[in-house]
Structure formats: C-alpha cells, structure tokens
Image 1 (cartoon, rainbow, N blue to C red):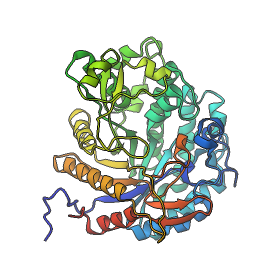
Image 2 (cartoon, helix red, strand yellow):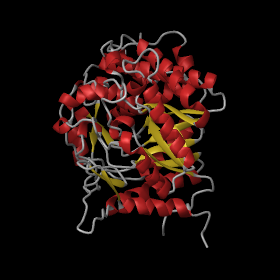
Image 3 (cartoon, one colour):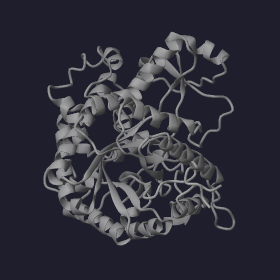
Image 4 (cartoon, one colour):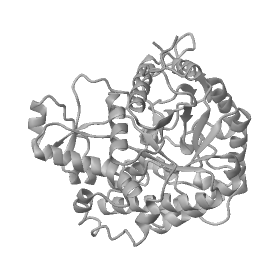
Amino acid sequence: MSNNNSPKQFPAGFTWGTATASYQIEGGAHEDGRGPSIWDTFAKTGVLNQDNGDVACDHYHRYAEDLDLLKNLGVNSYRFSIAWPRIQADGTGAPNQKGLDFYRRLVDGLRERDIAPAITLYHWDLPQALEDKGGWVNRDTAYRLADYTGHVVEALGDDVARWITINEPWCVSWLGYGIGVHAPGIQDIGKAVAANHHILLAHGLATQVIREKLPEAQVGITLNMALSKSATDHELDQYATAVANGNHNGMFMGPIFKGEYPEIMREHYATASDNFAVVQPGDLEIISAPLDFLGVNHYSYSYQAHKTRVAEARAAGFNYNPGPANVYSEDMPGVPLGVPGRPRTAIGWEVDETGISDLLLWVKQEYTDLPIYITENGAAYQDYVNDKGEVNDNDRIAYLNAYMGAVNSAREQGVNVQGYYVWSLMDNFEWAEGYSKRFGIVWVDYPTGTRTPKASYYWYQNVIKTNRLPE
C-alpha cells in the first residue's frame, strides 16, 4: 500500500506534462507565410556550427506523430509555444491564416487525445522586422505583442484554458541584449535594462488582452529562476549574491508581484539605465496585475563571491572557472563559483536538487502563494543509441527523480505546486548550442527525423501512471 504522506506520492489531479518551443522543434521556417525571426538571423553567426531551425525536428509536418508520443506517454497537459513570425511575418498587421490553422490543428489534436494545451505566446522568436526597429529596447514592441496576442486568443481561445505570456524574460533581456550569447546578440547594459522592462510591459499588456477576450482563462508568466548562495558570510560576498539574485529573480518578481523594482537593482543600474527612465507612469500597475499561476523554470544554481574575494572563495573550497568576459560579467560585482565533485550535466550545469526546493520555498515566503507549475526542468546528457536501438539515459532518470522529489518536498512544506513539465519532449535545437545538446526524453535522429523514446520516456510514463516516484 502506498503512503500518501511520502514525498514520492503526488496528489490526485496533479498536472503532468512536457514542454517544447516553436523555433526549437517546428522547422518549416520558410513555409506558409512564416517570416524570419531574430533566431533565423542570429543562427548565421551566433550559433554553434551555424546550426539553425530551418528544419529542426520537422514538427510542423510530423506533429501528429509527436501528439501520439504524448498520448502514449500519458501526460494530461502539453506546453508549447506559438511562433510569432508564423502569425505575423513582420510582427504587425492582419494575422496569417495558414499559421493560425497549424496551431488549430495542434490544439484539436491535443483535445482529441485528452491532453490540455498550455500555450506560451512568446518563446523568443521575435519577428526580425521588429528587431530592425529596436526589438525589446523599443517600447512599441510591447504593444505589438499585445496585438499579436489578440489574434492568437481569438483563434484558439475557446479550446485553451492556460496561457503563459512570456517564457524566461531574463534570457530575452540579459542573454539577448546584455551578455549577447542569444539573439539578437547585443552587449549593452542599458539596453538590457530597457528590454527587461519592455518585455514585462508586454506581459502586462498581453494579460489585459487575455482577460478581456477570455475572462475564464488562466493567465501566468514563466520565469527562469535560480537562488544563488553566498560563498561565505563576508559582507562583500553577501552583497554580490544579493545583486546576482536581484538581477536574475528580483528584476522580474519585484515588478510582477510587488509593483516595483528592487532598490538594490535601481541603485545598481541607475547610471546605465538613466535611473530607470524607461519606466513610465502606469507601467508597474499594468505589469503587476493579478495572475492565476506562476510558471517556474529551474535547472541549476551557483554560489557567489565578490570579485575581490576569489582567492578566499577558492580557499573555502570553491571552483572558479571564468568564462569569456562580457559587459554583463564586468558589470556584476560577483562571480559564480562551482562546488568540487558535484555532478554536472552535459551543458555544464551542476546538479543539486535542493536548488529547486529552496527556490520554491523562497518564492512562497517572499512573493506569492499562487499556484505554481514547474514549466521546465530537465537535463542534457551525452545520449546515444546502442546496438539494440535503445537510449539508456540513466543519468537523466536520476536527475528527474531527484528534482521531482525535491519539488514534492517543497509542496509538502506548503508551496502550492500543482504541476510539473519535463523539458523536453524531444531532442531539439538548443539555441546557441545548436544540435549539440540533447534534453529530450525522445531521441531525434536529425538527418531522418526518426523519433525513439528513451529509457527516461518510459520511466516518466510510469511516474505519471502511478502518480508517484518509484521506490
């Protein structure tokens, strides 16, 4: 008999799903009226091996096969994103009916298989024409996203209950406009702050549109968060950690849940952003409008030491492996540190499941008791198909088992976690890493498009079926 008080047991009605993103899986980049996105442009110069999403997993043509994989897996929800350039080639004007028709087929296919669609409106594929006008540094882009939202909601809203406005705005603003390793590849702190604010404004405006057109819909945003820890109790290390957490978490959680940017960040970016002049009267009221849920993406976290205290951090037992310098790393007072001996994924991220439970408890304590969905969690490993045609990704199974258990532990401590989505359904285009990193629970042979469920797929299938983690 199962013990319902065990951390391995999940509650009845828990949402189990997987997640994908349009540019990472769809392909069909030049078909049926789709326009170019910033990732089509960036892939030519900023992606490993100049990989691109022209074909990706060919989901645009093979979506029915992928929906059958979801049905067989047993998930009750599927999170996917809409490609903005497929709906409006240049980000403005009347919607492209062929683009809307594709997502109608996708939603209908999910409904036929008793899987609830959870739609992300923006997962990074900004129409290039809008970037040519300033992208997220340009306030007008927020209003264009609101218009685009209206077209999508009008076309699909009757059959979609859960809407996510933006995926990981930190990556959009800071990886895209600050560090420059994501599209559009800009390195400018002031532009990153502007993008940070404008994408939050877009979230608030999109929320208004959804509320107006679909009063019964659930609306939320997905934030990628990691709670850095101070390497020591020294005040400089603690300050560096506070700024790191302020940038990664507070610059989004503050405006959304408290209607303000954290004081420590207003001070830190005062010069670069002209004292947050980008914030106009009424913006924070729009951004902080009530939500129905919060999406949390989490993969890993780090320790922080002040730049002047790297030697002391090393003496305390931490690793410091500086990456290529950029304006963001030069601007931050601290540096991220590693823990010797801690396992890492193939992308280099340390594995410690306490990071996700600590984060969830912090969100509840500091910001909100809203329902939380883990909208992404997963790991890349060096998967391969053996001579029996199998992919035995036992490292991924161990990772998922540990992180799911930590999520359930936080839930049992009072965090209102109502669902979990594995990243990702299938191997795909992993942004700046191209096709070199595999996160999927389904193997994709890119030359042929053949799908092969991995051992983790069958493991997750059993978790969903039993609603518990294995002993």
